[in-house]
Length: 313
Length: 299
Image (cartoon, rainbow over all chains, first blue to last red; front, top):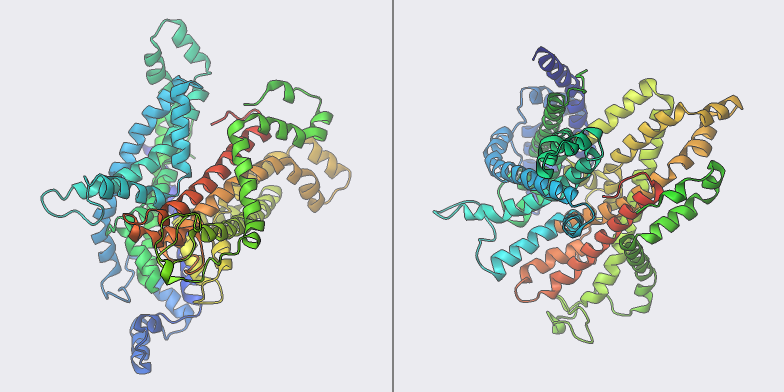
């Protein structure tokens, strides 16, 4: 346990410069470029006095390096300041939107993982047969279809054509949870496809190992061989790729939230970029970055957990 | 599927006929060949169709609004009476421009940075790893959107911003791959031999090492096209990429969304165009992956 703890601490320390890098890049991309947020927010009704007041209020009139240090110092204590447009605390807005995104992301990642492992396993067991070809074709198509198109297709089929599910908006009312079905379905398909392909490749690789032949030779049924012997080792790449799955789900969330008008963090970020709402952009970028970093560390810890050959260093 | 007999040759012969072998292996893969055929069709359409086709994709004709597909308008017309066929054809051009430039930018950055890091090692290597870790940690879509926002000229939508942003944000995979490959190449005899003969670093990298990873580059090229086309359609759909009235497939899907019930052709035509393009580039990439590296197990 001690090895895990010290590894985690070391990884967290190494994360600090990377998060600093993400912060700096975001700052440069939004703050060094010309174009005054105050002016953008006022739009048509521009009033120089008010613009100056807004600039002063947000500290936009100060030199860039002063602004940079100000933001950086506050960010260390997770304070991103207030939104330029809604005037709300950014951390508050993100925390408020978090459940909406989590309620899409967690079930779809879990479902995608379960279904993906099952389908990948089945596919590998029947390699190059009809089942395998079908699964490969379906997952290949799913990987190729742009996410927003997939979401729109589902929305049209179930919401507008069959009229059995609500097409957009957040959970409300007694049957409100039905609003969850389509967005979760869309995101599940996304993670399902990738994980199926990963599982299939991993299982096929493991199936050529000697210990699988031994297991078969001693007369174990095929299913037992595959589930108890092959799957265990085939899980390793799945666990290692946890951060990739999380990053994929996060990108998927942007499009799914946009298509289904789902008030999650993805929609918050897209609106913020539209409005050049710098504090919110910084908040959502850092949120995504931290999520990725955590998934990466957890993935590596789990890999060490399931694979004794991997040493934590 | 790769045949073992093709690979069991003397090294000299492999060197001479490598691309011929790749081509033969690719041709045996029917799906990949279909993908390649569609890709060639797309390139031809992008190059020549706008010259042959005399329908303007942008001029509005409000009298002809929302017409279903007919002989005159094979894909129907949109809300402003613009011919959707002409728009999809011109959209092919946008998709391929974005795909090619974004992919070339990404591969150029990835191979150069990864090559330098893998070849020299040391602090340059550490710096490069730090660099790509930052970009990999940045939420992907937000990075593209932030770049489109930041690229000059500020506030003006330009196609160049779209492909540069996609290219500048998608080099990490190529960089990591090149770095790891170069680290293993560095230890091999042919590099040692070249160095013993007095070759400088530039010559070793470009004459001896890069040709050894051309296979990977070709695969990344096809895969990058698929990714870039999907990314362009995606960010244009969200309203950050190509702006109306320019006929990007993503813009058309976004415009057609409100008329999904009444005018299906407004969304189905550009949607299917995007899907087929991404699909065929992916098929080609998958086929190439098997063709350039026969040991690789097909997905």
